[in-house]
Figure (cartoon, rainbow, N blue to C red):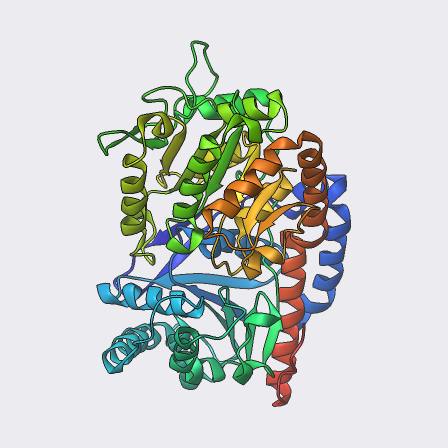
Length: 508
């Protein structure tokens, strides 16, 4: 959990709840190997970082994988003995996040070129104000880590002012070259080159001009957070009821959530998700995608694919059970309330477009599709909603056209669930086709998505095998302990190179 502390400044300092401690993880024997590896690296690295504060600067503390992962990274770094602060951008010019969303899309190879002089003036103006305010808080021997394009230029300005080591963590990328992405990289080039090190999720995302300074680091999930921890059958049912995701005539131990999950109604309004009737999460085959409301997540083609799946003739089913599975299947499309993510101004527009497409469907298909808004009033309750929605799913979907990494894939895999993903580079890095789930080469092709879902629903045994393989893969490669170990190794390298005045070598 994190709480932003309001300041009359262009940045906010985020207070982080300690949450689970290292000794809590040590109680679980299946986590012991990763924890031991982390502690071994910490014993070497932490003394070399003594006396330095590490500053994390990102755009927001709510919504999306970066904001969600930061509290655990900050807390565990502190527990290992590091001094860490987390700050976010506070109330920039309203046009700033619209601009950085355009840059975000272009770095994903989407949208059209068109970044001009006014965009540069806006970006630099917000960055100068942020850098001027934050630079006075930092000392020359501190380390500054900036996340994604929003605070990159501010980081470069702070480095110039204070002379401290600067690391840029870029969580997005595109494994190709188009005019839009090339323009975005030219826009960011000078600021990115000012960094001592740039970190990318995949080698394919690294632009040539940063190849000598680039390191590769996959993000990881925390297995004990409310989103990922194990849930008993009774706990799962209780959360569904408390969140208004399921109806019941029986009493439950906990009180209702502060804010319920909201479901799109035929009149265009959103009401608690048990209306107009129970979704059937505990009983029906459920296909679920949970993401930010972003066009790159492929919600629209997924809606079309599910409609095609439902309209298939019975003769195409493998057997009676397969046809019954398709007949009873429901699609759940869920994302955060649109006002809760300040750096994603397109969310409301994307959700509105999806709602319009749903309302154009015949009533019998509307009945089979639930579009949900998950409130961000409580970070804990939001995470528990995501957890139970995934655990109630027959297949978890991430039909992304572009995806920097896509932690929703790793989260579902950790729960031993089969995943169907669009073959974006970040998803391919996690999901092994035919081993931990299925990939769709063209997630914008509704027919191809429908064919893949049709085949997955036909094979109960394969889905079980994929789910078990998926959990094993996450356990070995995509837990937070591996990410932390890489952070410690990288920070030590950067400090050592800075102290000696030599160039920081590239590394994997």
